[in-house]
View (tube, rainbow, N blue to C red):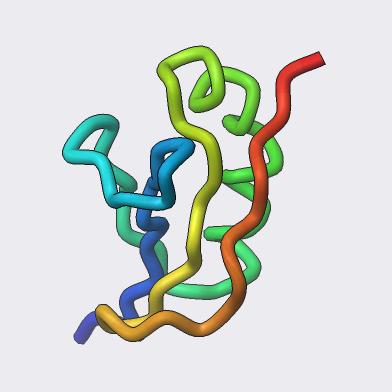
Amino acid sequence: MSGPQWTWQFLAVDEQAVDRPVSPAFTSRFDAEAWLGEQWRSLAGEGVASARLLHQGAVVAPAVPLRKG
């Protein structure tokens, strides 16, 4: 049995979704948010401007800006 699926949608500066990188799936919101806290610098380095949390494909929170520096 699998739990709820939490994923991140990554956005470019123009707020359009990007194809890469791809978010892993998480079984809890806590795990998803903890992962983003650890990975945001790397994601920003790959050109991701912000990340939006999805729960089973539905947006559940405003986009989080990923600023380097």
